[in-house]
Length: 119
Image (cartoon, rainbow, N blue to C red; front, side, top):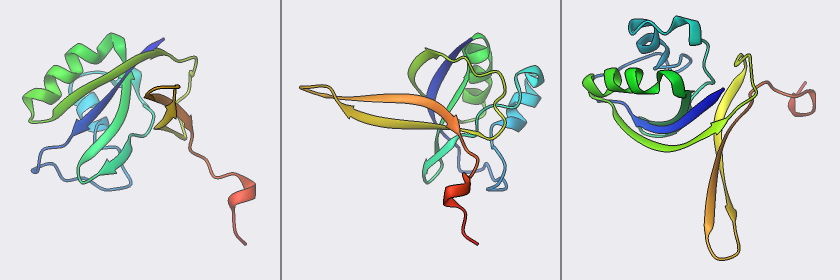
């Protein structure tokens, strides 16, 4: 399925629990429950997030978010073979391509590996 990646700035009046995804409630509000869960957005700074949505719902969902004061910047679209987005997070990396930098956006597993756990 195609997924589109975005930077989204939350308006100042939006307050939420930091452990919860601030976009899930809007997906429910606009009737996109069948596409939940989504990969956890990456909090970049202040109220800016990197996230991805299925491209098939992007236009309608982003129109609703825009009407609610969200500022949206499109980044890219990519084919993802992930079926279950439980314990995943959206991320980005910048690589040198010989004469310029290129940013890649992807979804990765967010679970803590046994190697990183402390006893």
